[in-house]
Image (cartoon, rainbow, N blue to C red; front, side, top):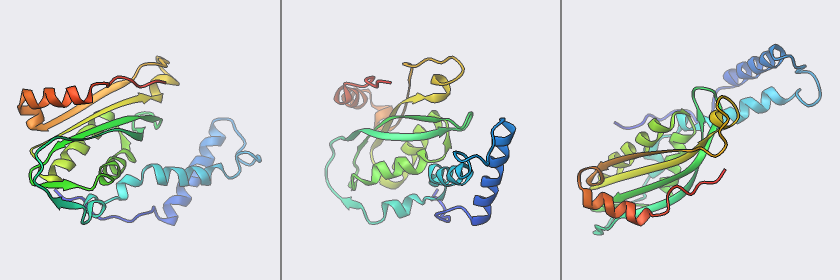
Length: 203
């Protein structure tokens, strides 16, 4: 299913309402939103959240544009260590790490810069890592129609590091394997061999 085109920014009315809400939140937390260090914070927060949730207003087909090319290659294409930042929908705290993407072409290849842009389109939303991983793989499968797609994400979650269990070195790995990467063990093993050094994140 194709993604819908939406406005690139939130409305001025929404921006003003977010600003007002954050000013009230600061007061409820015991702060003085009128003091020098905080007087413009609500506006800055609204602008930051507009950017960090900009993925809701992205259209994948527009991102890809004309960057699909006919190519007879049938070898695995891998882009690894793609920096990724997102926001946990449960606590509105960041999670961040690396995404590794692979696909096996089926007559088409995509401009390499488009894959990080697709990742950002889904990462810049309120997310859980499991869903983010699947959304990226499903969309690449739709756009490229390849023999298979694999997406692996390794991420630190500040909701685990700053609060709750406060575990500083723990991180989460999720994967989504589609097509031949899911159905053919030899192809999956080749991919994992090529990726080799996963599990190297450092806090």
